[in-house]
Image 1 (cartoon, rainbow over the protein chains, first blue to last red):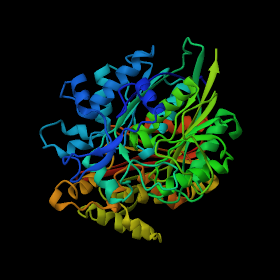
Image 2: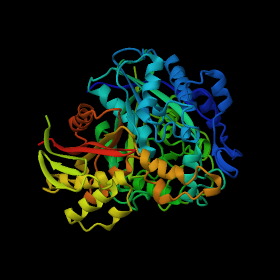
Image 3: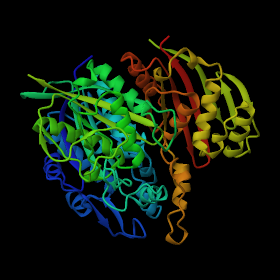
Image 4: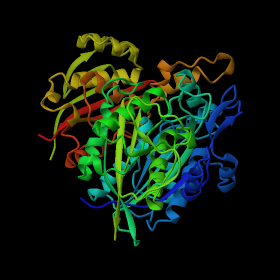
Amino acid sequence: MKQVYFTGDNIISSLGFSSEKNFKRLLQGKTGIGKINDITLYPEPFIASMVDRNKIHTLLPDNSYSLLEKMLILSVEDALKNSSVDICSEKTIFILSTTKGNIDLLDKPTGTYNADKIYLWKLADTIVNHFGNRNKPRVISNACISGVLAINTAAMLLQNGIFDYAVVAGGDLISKFVLSGFMSFHSLSPNPCKPFDAHRDGLSLGEAAGTVILSVNQPEQKNNFIFAGGASANDANHISGPSRTGEGSYIAIKKALKEASINASEIEHISAHGTATPYNDDMESIALNRHHLSSVPVNSLKGFWGHTLGAAGIIETIALLHEMKKSTLIPTAGFSVPGTVEPLNIVAKPEEKEMNTCLKIASGFGGCNASLIIKKTAQ
Amino acid sequence: MSIIGNHISISKNRIFKNETLIFETDPKLSLKEFLKASWKNLNVKYPKFYKMDEISKLGMVAAEVLLMDEPHKAFSEEEIGVVLSNAHSTIVTDINHWDTVKNDDAFFPSPAVFVYTLPNIMIGEICIKHRLKGENAFLISREYDEAMILQHINLLMNQNKIKAAIGGWVDQWENDYLAEIFWVSST
């Protein structure tokens, strides 16, 4: 099995257009969630985290590309800058993580765009054609675990020598389609969400794009970050509610630990899914306690970016990487009073902490759960 | 390294198990009617089936036929994965949801429809029905790429994450549909 290194990344979100900019804002504890008044998206004002769309169109004015395509292209472009990976190489695979892709185009008159754009394979084709990569891209559309699953899939292809490099990008938009659906579920909070808090009352939605670049070549630097293990599992319980025993999440963590050949006690920090719905956060507290991880610092970044669906697993993994690089824990925006069914050690303010082994977890509709473990290695 | 077991194919209101036709209805019946007749014919007591969207029902019928001989009983719940794929994600259900929200004066979205606008919900339904707790993945590609799905499953098996899986293609678009699913195991 080959070693897989994280070698470059980018985040485009309400907090900025690079990983560094985002990380800085995360440490300041500033949320990107706010009140939005846009009747083309929802008849009434709503709470969400949105990117500066004007800036996207200014940076990439070519309107043959959709908004999401522009975000993904800009994200991949920036991530490539801080990596030596050649996206055009035949050894490079592009993997896209998205739940709904260009679904906002449904709101535009037919005939004003290429009808195929609504399909997720076409979205991936558009990105690889832009960059001139000739390998058939992989598209993962697996609800809210898509991002983590896309990274796990990329790592698996690299570990087994199928490809040497992977560009893994994820993105989803705030759209009338998605907003109205979550509204009908009554799962949105009237305020910026409060992950793991006793008074949490639902999630906030967000839009973002993110990219991580993986390579089998060890970057020339003092400390490196490797993909140590990952897995997914199904609760086999309910399609829109998490398991009361945290079953799938527990199994996904167990299998990732096994792949990484470590014990749960070696995990030093956990980046949770933490959507701030009462059930999700309780479920994660149960799954983590089943692994005796109640004293390990846990954060959720949903209070900054909202739930960014197909981008979430990617950008939250990038933030975790940067926490490890800078030896600093990001606080959980929106959290103040502990209130999960099982105890957790929620990060409430920025903290210095040397970290060598960290866990990212995610869960989603369809009873799906995913996990991945990152390890720091010294040269 | 892995063994491909039974293969189920559903199209034009006909269900084939390997090359044998096991059920058919009038090809003029709608997909909805065909799926209802298929489920009835399978004689499964599972009322939850009727609340699902059409593409999930299609996946459920295919999985029910595939697992009839219980190949999955030789493995534990965590050892069995589901890796499915299609080209159109959940476009038919997406349009159903969209029709309830596109006009502000006729705005009545339903959570029961919206939840099915994710292709992996079908995987979730199959996992619930058959108690499968292993790896999940829903992949989107322009055409049915059996080699890609098999590669994904084989790599998961190589890394000891699963020992068996349901793989294949379950797709539905404007006026047509196709399901091609198969069983794979390491032994």
